[in-house]
Image 1: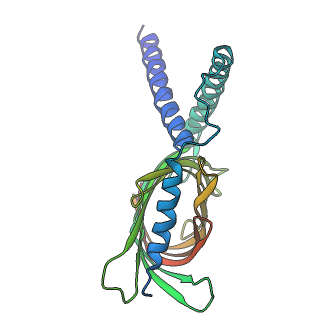
Image 2: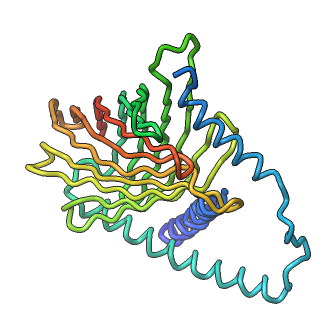
Image 3: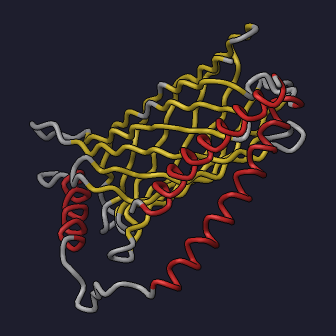
Length: 281
């Protein structure tokens, strides 16, 4: 009777967890120098936001075919159910068999950066400062991260001009034999300037070397505006980390990296950054 009760409770917990992850999954997928260079990015953001508020000429609010909708809904529910059963099984396998001490961990990354932007005429270079704090949680096959990208201008202007962007994503980790961790994430990029959210895709990896003394982390992210069919933000970069503290449940790394960014398919910025990676496991 006790065993049956435990199985029943486990089944209920699984159903609730599946509903929660399904909701998060759906949310992630369907979310949709007299002159300041930050103002240039803000102007493109505002123009794009104004376009979002316009209803397209071919807009059709007629309901879909109910039979087609029901079939699509059932098929999607079946695929999600199978996918999450496989993910939970894979997650259990990782938690039980992985030798990686950071398989369950919290990562804190306080980082600062310095950015450069070449003017369109290729004659002037504009400078930026960048605050890049990140917080990431890892639980076997699952990860979640929140990042603030606080870009502000470093010129002779008398006023403080900034462009803060928030990134949130939920990721699936693929960890073959503890050789590396490949993370495929889906989430949201939120622009504080225009108060607009875009769907964002993330792809990154952590490649440990010499018993995790060094870690190389290439990554890329892309935000897409489905309404206007443009890319508000794209980033490709990599960072390297060198371990300076090694305790049973805590690692500290010195981290440095570089990234290329493109805002609204027009404004390119190269960012060089450094800081710490703190891992509690």
